[in-house]
Amino acid sequence: MDNSTRRSDALGTNGAGTAPLSLLEAQKVLAVFNCLEEAPSLSESQQAIIRSALRTVVQEADCVIFGVCADSIAQGLAAVRAYGAGLDREVPPEPERRGVANPEQPIYIKCNTNSLLFYAEPYQGENRGVLVSCQSHVDEELNAMYGHLPLDLFA
Image 1 (cartoon, one colour):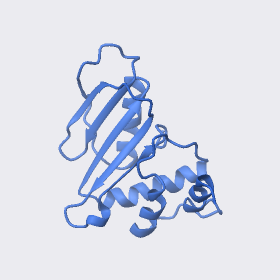
Image 2 (cartoon, rainbow, N blue to C red):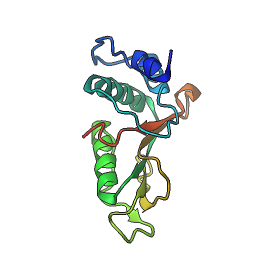
Image 3 (cartoon, rainbow, N blue to C red):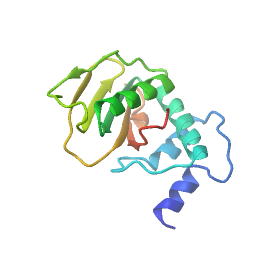
Image 4 (cartoon, rainbow, N blue to C red):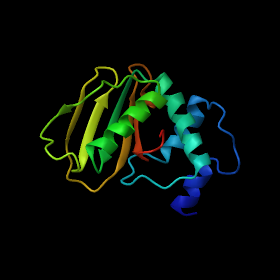
């Protein structure tokens, strides 16, 4: 079985709905996205399942951090704000801009939704997408990073 088939199976493309997932089910769905270099193309039903899985895991996390790699600051800010809203996490209004001179240059944005650390800086890498890091002070099984996920997953 190739990776795309495994990904489709894990995402429940067999017609499964997007009812709330248990924590274990959500972690299984998201495990496919553990440290991907590139955000995959996903069907609308796959995106709905991933959104549901993220909501479940984020709800249990003590700390959630978004890392966004985008082609421009506008694209990156749209993504981090959409993820924040979609996952019911606070995102400050504007990031600290660290060396960002050109609004059309590739950008990395980090947003810690607990401490509200929020900054943007130039990004030289090729990766594009969103990393979601979930941390728990109690449950080590919950500590994971998922992504790169699509920039427009919550658009």
